[in-house]
Length: 344
Image (tube, rainbow, N blue to C red):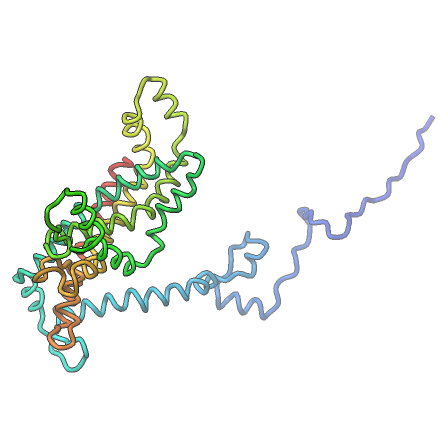
C-alpha cells in the first residue's frame, strides 16, 4: 500500500528579515555622492554600524575645538610669550625693547631679593603642605560619623572655602592687629603683657599667612577625604579592632593606606598653591610684603620687579616667572614619582 505524497508549501521569509545566506544578494551600494565623500574624508571601519556609519574622524575634534582654543589662547601662548620676553628688557607698558639673552637669568641668580622670596615660598610649602595633608584628614574622620547635628558642623567647616580671600584677609587683619580681638582677649586674660606684633614682625606675618591658608583650605580638602574615606572597607576596621588595635593604630594601619592616593593629590595641589601664594601676604603684610619686603613670596616679587609701571622690568619679571614654573614643575614631578613608587 503506497503512502500518499504530502506537498509542503515553500516557506517565505517575512518582510525585513535580516538573515543573509551564502547566496543572498548584497545591500544596495552607496550612491555616487556618498562614495565621493568617503573617498575624501575617511569614514568608520567596515564593521561599524548604527550612528558610527555617519560619524567622521574629525567630529570629536570639532567638539573639543572650544577647549583647545581656550587652552591655547589663555595657557600655551602666554607661557611661550613669557619665555620669549624673559630674554628681553621689555617694559610693563610696552614699547621698544632689546634682546638681552641670558642677562635676566644671570641677574636673577645674583639677586638676594630673589633668593629671599624663594626661601619664603619654599618655607611656606614645607610648613603648609604637611599640615594641609594631615589636618583635613583628621577633620574628615571627625565629621564622617552620622551623628545628630553633624551636618551643621560640616557646613561650618566648609564656610571659609566659600568666602573671598580678600574678605578672609580683612577679617584676619582685624583679628590680629595690635588692638584686635586676639590681642585684646590675651591682654584681658593677663596671658601677655603687651600686644603680639602679628602684623609687624616679619616671621609672625609669614606664620599668620600660613594659618590663614590652612584655615581657608581645611574645609575644601575635607571634602576630598570624606569621599576617600567612604571607599575604605569597614571590614578592615572591624578586623583590626578584633585583633586589639586601638584608634591610633587603626588610623595609621587602615585609614592612611586607604586614602594614600588622596593624600598625594592633596599634597600636590597644596604644594602648587603654596608656591603661588600672594593674597595672604598682601592682606597681612601690606603692599610692601612685610617690613622691608621680608615676607615677599615669588609671585609677590614678580609683581614688584615686573609690573611696576615706573621701575618695572617685564623681561626680568618673566625670567622669575619661568623660575617659578620650573620650581612648580619640579614639585609636581616629585609628587608623581612618589605616587608611582607607592603604587609599585
